[in-house]
Length: 426
Ligand SMILES: [Zn+2]
Image (cartoon, rainbow, N blue to C red; front, side, top):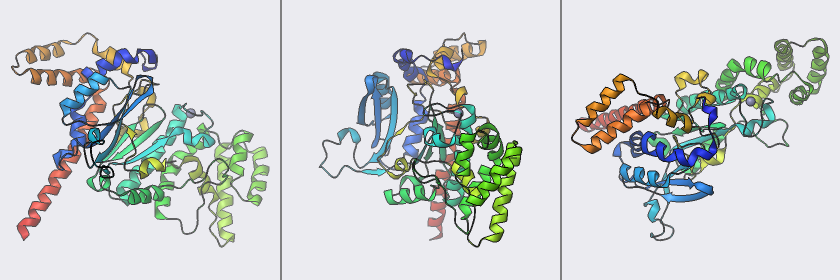
């Protein structure tokens, strides 16, 4: 069954099965507990649930993994969001003295949504996406991932498909979680290049000298530009999209190009002419002339929803939450497979629930017999849960989360060793 066969009406029937047998609670708890380094880190975390008929319940919090599991299995939320770690337990926020309940920490998060690119994609609009425009998300991830690692030194970045038309990034390093609102704003501003709304024609303005961060970002865009913008989006093709590009070049260049384009229809050659004119112009004027680079960035550079990144108490859809409209699971993206990641391949809740009922192979039956011998019921239940998701297309995404969590655990161990070595020296 192709995963596009999801029917939103079936969601209330599928969610109980999903939360009972498939949701990766142990990895989820392991993530948000961060090794138990800070007291009450998981317990003071806000979760919010969207229930049937858009009933929104904020300030949920849980003492243990089991409590979280039980509550999610009882409420069967259509959507789960993760908020900040607060000074007190969020579910008791009404009982603490007013003003003392405060958001203290949260992952640094980024939200990139395809609807913000509507002025520069011709294949789809609004909530629609296709394999052509998905390249914009690939470019966004490449650019931001590089910058966050190389320019800011972060190491633990979890990229997640939102389930519909965008991606989220959770920067999980301790230093990122402790950033103030002002510091988060500074990072988000540093990473924002495309400015202005609908009424702004020229949304990227470059000045001399070009910042190294912009050069590095341009290198990423350049590797996708020809295939994506010139071929697939055909931005120099039909009159409407061509006019938009020509509005971004100086008057004399526009005249030259219009004449050249009358006989030359090949998009690569058309772009080549534009590049040549840009280079010539740079030789004759003193001030930087980078209109070809500005066009590339305006069409391809990531468009961030900076408000999501700035706030500590801003909520963001949780990984492994279901997208109620598409039924797709919000899965982590392995950057080693980024160029082949296809949002339409991401499993829907209906697909993975159906996969659970498929006849099992001999090997799996044996494993099941094994667990019957276990004295501890909880152990057996845990084992069954592990095996359940492994029977489905969700398995590789949970495995990837495991690897991500192993990476963070190794870092924590490394930090501890460093600290104990320092103490020995004194
Ligand atoms: Zn598209």
